[in-house]
Image (cartoon, rainbow, N blue to C red):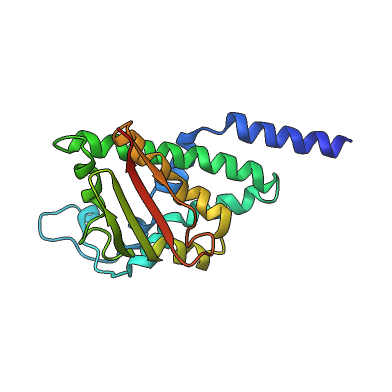
Length: 208
């Protein structure tokens, strides 16, 4: 009985007390930046030693894996203490916040929040190094993509965290991004590479 009570107390603490800010630090405090630094490089004349240039090169997938390594480690610690359902709920809250902020930032930096302005973010050459995609439907109200390769899905598989957990970290944000860009926009999707399907079928819809 005491063990069950302790388990519930830990779960209650994590779900109610863990801030999105803390998760953001874990996911976005970009260790790839540190990994890319050559600490033995020499600064240019007159520069401070902290301004020495990095000369290491990494693949795009290596950078993604480095970026999320701390978050993956944290998730694996949580797996020892709380159920996967609770972890997924926490991660969905985190990725919803990320998607909302992305949509708001892109809307504020765009000339307008039209459907055309939104869909331009998915047109070539966007994501050329991270996704293999094709546009399968392109109308004033519907924009549909078929993604057959995804760098995040591959990276999370190699980090042993694909499936529903990887979907909660990465893919869930896609639902909140269009709504934050324009409340009349939404996304529909029935499958993702992260969940082991043959493709991601993103459909963005202008409901107005």
